[in-house]
Length: 295
Ligand code: HSE
Image (cartoon, rainbow, N blue to C red; front, side, top):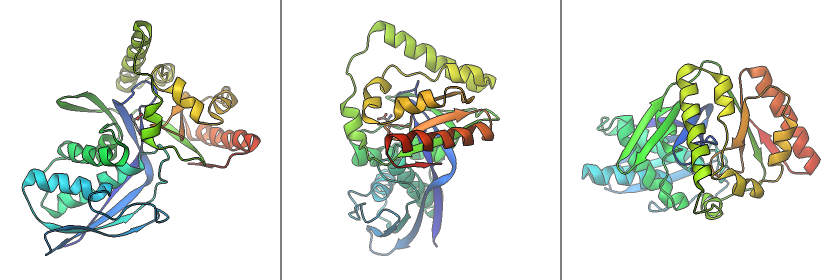
């Protein structure tokens, strides 16, 4: 038996929800195929689309680390061969490592007769995130596994809340051609917040969640603010503020850093706006002389 699973790109943080909010993107993502072997070991037998950059060692690859965590929990020594097709750029802030782990887990779970429901797979994917970037955050892996918007209300113990998705919400992803490692963009974060900042961040995350339930895109746009990570991380992303001011009058709901960057996400209420924003992004980055991909 062979099982193939797809897991999508994700936008973590979504400005107001540092480490606790993320959503999945339609279409783009990674694919993993798993096949049982009789060797009682996990093997990463091939990877395409990574430019040779990802490790094949089972204790370093996010697919095998995630599946191993699941097998350990099941006390199983089932051998599995893993084949990874990367559709997402590495170090982009689009949840690339998370998508590989998520697809691997969904595929392996099915191979084993679905011992876990989807939420049950999240802790295993977090172990892979820890290997990939030194922090076991769930705001990429949870939406990559579950789809839609997901809140991680707490980590100890893990409390994962799937959220409603508004009817008309379009996301433009602008990926400047620089690579940022999550570990590095976490290291620039301030360790302390003022009371005033904590109050602002709580207001915005609460507003954002209310907007999802009310399908209120104006409120959603007003809530796209971040006083925790954006002020320090934006400095690592050339063109970030230029893009924000460039799209100011195009009708988008708001913009922010996707996960730990450098990708910038922009939310729009319709496809036409999302495309206009993408066109503007190309202009802005051409002006500063940095290559971009727009999705
Ligand atoms: N919440 C994580 C961070 C997401 O901002 O570091 C990383 O993609």
